[in-house]
Length: 248
Figure (tube, rainbow, N blue to C red):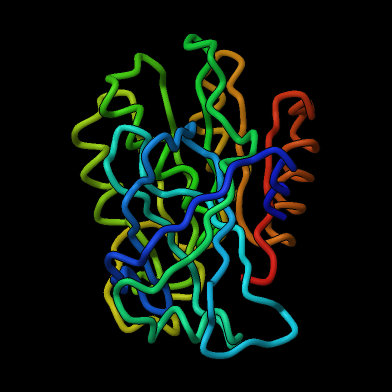
């Protein structure tokens, strides 16, 4: 699951500025960045609805990885829609709806040894922390080789895929490998790879690299299976960093 906030994190009140459906069943929400708010690419925040129109047993608070890069003037999060009071409110909230923001927190940060490549492995909405990292790396012209393996069920559910393709064009140190696992249910065409992310596909890249660090984010079952796959291939746990997104 997403890491829990540190008890000393600071709180702000923020207002919903914009909402956009960025993929089927996925919303992006934008807020002005509070004065003094600082974070690192890959970190997360808690958002709590103030005066929600409805509540349920799951509560009015959720953790979100930040999609925006620290260099941006706004804060952006993205979420899959689910049948909860919180998520239903997100789809209907008027602009200006207020949230309490707590954070930032989390340690899924890009390692600082630039000579060691990073291999990102994302399933579905697990792409969110990697978007922040890749945006900032591209802005900073970071001299570090970054590789993203990104799996979705169908093209229409693949959040940020057009942006990732554009980042690959702008950043000579970044390569994207996207795959779809359920094209038999797809309503949009796809000419790229299909099927799950396998060690064979990863090793076609990793086998040419010196001491890569692996980052895995996605649903719990996907994260567990990917860690097991990497371990079976001889990757040491010290070189694997992961977060699983459950209940989102």
